[in-house]
Length: 76
Image 1: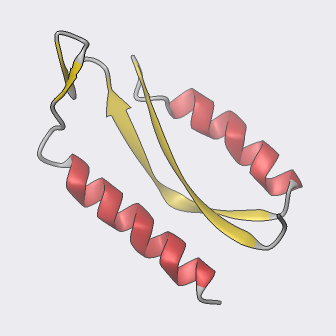
Image 2: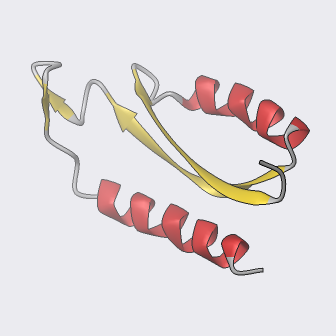
Image 3: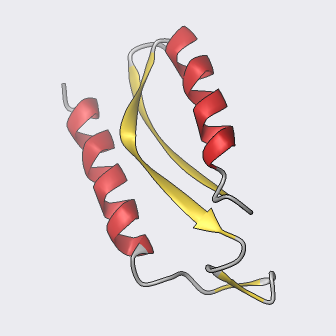
């Protein structure tokens, strides 16, 4: 699994940011190029009553930016 590109998408109370930061260390050891852009889904703003997924308007922009970076790394 070395020399691959990866993007991160996480969710949680703080949009899963801490989990992604921990995962970046593991990815580095596996020689996986993790891109800078990441998608954080908040339980408070992107879910209705903490159950139904209702993404905020800016989420699509974050996903697009992350995927663009993953594709650029993968084509190298």
